[in-house]
Amino acid sequence: MAVSGAPSVERELALSHWGYLTFAYALPLAAAAVLEAGTALFSDVWSRARLIVLGQGLLAASLFFTSWTSSSWGLALGLAVAGAASGVACGAAQALLVLSSSDTTDRVMVRWSLFCAIGDVCTPLATAIAIATGHSYRAAMGAVAVVVCVQCGVSVGLLCGAGGIPDANLRSEHEGDPESPDGAAERVHVAFLRALRFPLLWGWLFAAASCTLLDELVVALAVLRLDRDRAASPALATAAAVTFSLGAIVGSAVTDRAVSRTSACTVIVTSAVLTAAALLVLRVSGSAPIACAALLLVGIACAPHHPLAMAQAYGAVPERPGTVQAIGQIFVLVDIAAPLVLGLVADHFGLDAAIGCLLIQPAIIAACGVLLGRTPPSPVIAAPRR
Image (cartoon, rainbow, N blue to C red; front, side):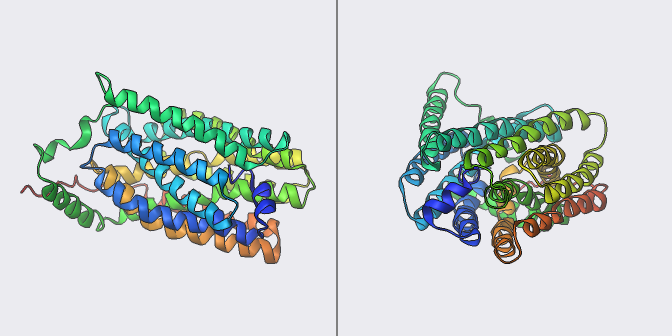
C-alpha cells in the first residue's frame, strides 16, 4: 500500500524521492531484518503454527499504527514491524509447505508466488479505490488491517481446533525426540555455522535478494513516473500497479507448467532475457497505456526469478528452511542499498535513469542460472545429538 500509494505518501509526508525510498524501504527493511533473522533461524525448532498466529497479530497492529501516524519516522517504524511480522508468518508457513509437500520445491515456491501475486492485485486496487474516493493510503491500510485481524482469528481457530495447524515438521526426522531449549539452541547454532560454508546457498540467496529490484521498487518507480512525468491522475497511477501483479499471476501460472517440462535454470535464464526486454519497453514508454503494458510484461517475465532462486537455496541445504531464511536476512543489505541508490539516481538524473538501473537484476539472475545451475546440492545438515 505504501508502494502503490507512493504519490500519496510523498505528498502527505512532504518527502522527496530519496526521502520516500528511505522511510518506506531502507529503514523499515533494516529494522525488519534484525527482528526477523533470529526468529527465522529458531523456527526450525519452534512451533511454526504459533509463529504464524503471532506474526499475523503483530501485522494487524502495525498496519493500524501505520494508518494512524502522520510522521515519516512513524511510517518507517510501522512498516518495519509490519515487514518483520509478515516475514515471520510467511516464513513459517513457507517452511511448512517446503518440508511437508510431496511436490518438488520448485513448484511449491512457484505456487506460493502465484497466490502472493493474487493478493498483490487486491492491494493496489484497494489503494486506488481509497484515493479515487478522496481518501489516502491510510484508509487502505486500515481496511487491510481489519482483514488481517480476521485472518489471525481464523488461524487461532485452526490452532485451537481438533486438528490444529499441521506442525509435524517441527523437528526433522534426524533430530529424534524433543530436547531441552539448550539442546535446541545448540542444534540451530551448529546448523547455521555449517550452512555458512556452502557457496551454492550464498549464490542463490544473492540471486533471490536481487529480485527486490523487480518487486515493489519497479512498481514504485513506475507509479511515480506516471504521476510526476506523465501527468497521470493519482488514481490511474496507483491502479497501474495492478498490471504488474496481474502479470505476476500469469507468469507464475506459466512457470508452474514450464518447470515440469524443463529445468529450473533454463526457465530462469530465458525469463531473464525477456525481463530485460520488458524493462527497456518500460524505460522508453511515453504514455500511461504503454507503461501499463510494459509493467504487465515485466510482471510476467520476472515471475519465475524469486521462487525458483529460493527453491534452489532451499535445495542447497535440505531439511533446514529456517536456517536458509535466517542466512537470507544477511542480504537485506541489498534491499537497503537498492532504494537509497535508486532514490539518489531518481532525484539527480530522473526516474527514467532509475528505471534503467533495474536492468542489473535480470543480468544477475541470468548469471546465477548459468554459473550455478549445474552445481550439486549440499548434504543434509544434521546437527550433532546431545
